[in-house]
Image (cartoon, rainbow, N blue to C red; front, top):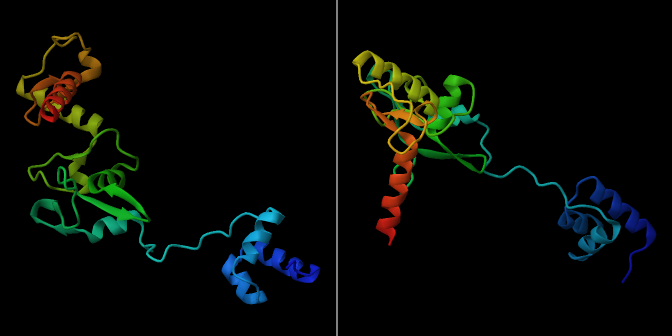
Length: 195
């Protein structure tokens, strides 16, 4: 049964102000499907969603810190959850999952990381912002170590022809290797294991 003009006008005003279909039906004494039909007929979009009930009032850095425990030497141990596949420390903030080290890096560097973020201290599980590095920073630090230890190389290409300027990476002890070759070998190994 169609609504009278005054009720349609009140319903349209409520829907335009952001009322949900359920709230409009209750306020105007309508059937529960009526506001949805009129919303579609009048071309009024859906009501805006309210904040999620579990929305954290903490900033992402504050939430990160709730899952850490200080250790000697300025290290931070992760007390939150980890991924099942490789044990990467993770947490969820406002319905999105983050890795703990990426947020630690962002807190220290003021920018998002480039590539993987790892601990560059003697405690491999560390998530302290001052102790983590992304790929460019890690490569730079390890190249400096290789120069000090005398393990740096003057080669401009690896054995497979990849440019060392672009693809060179270093192990934690300063030994150089080709990042692209390493990735290709890892993919081949995983494919062989899966077959």
